[in-house]
Image (cartoon, rainbow, N blue to C red; front, top):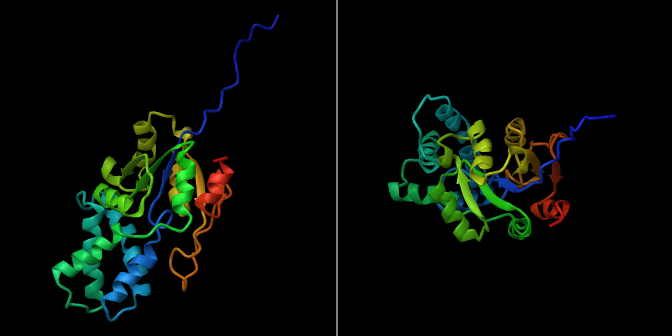
Length: 241
């Protein structure tokens, strides 16, 4: 007589979708480029936007490595702006103009598919941001753009920047679910690699124009992702929403 009462483990249902924001949900390049061009600076907004964006991964890495103390994303962006203006020999902007330009990061437009996709996904799952942006920035962005988050989580919530594991595991902890019940949604494979390493499911969103119409996006999805989608609407369809 077989007395083995062991059962196969049950796969836990997906409960939470955590979203990268800049590039995945909102179009940072177009908004920053327009704001720079409106100031009539000596450098094209298209170029300036990409250079500004390129400055923050090393800045965040220095914070995570303990080479400098914690700093909000807004403050890091403003510091990077000062450095970038100096690099281009632009010295005439007032402090008020710099702060106004820096605030463009909270006024970015969502991608055309974002609101519909998020709204559909929210009918079946808890949806939240998981961004390096600070909380104030993300609240203002959500209010302006109409992003229907159930909750807003950010690096500021956990005191460390992506790709630190505290953020990915922190989503599961805050939402009271297991890591495998969380899916990280991003247009950046390095973000998804870090999330998958923590046991999260992953969904890659294709954003071929993230860096503008004149700069093809070099990012490519890994076959190991749980889903690959052309848009957030496509992801909603794949998940039956």
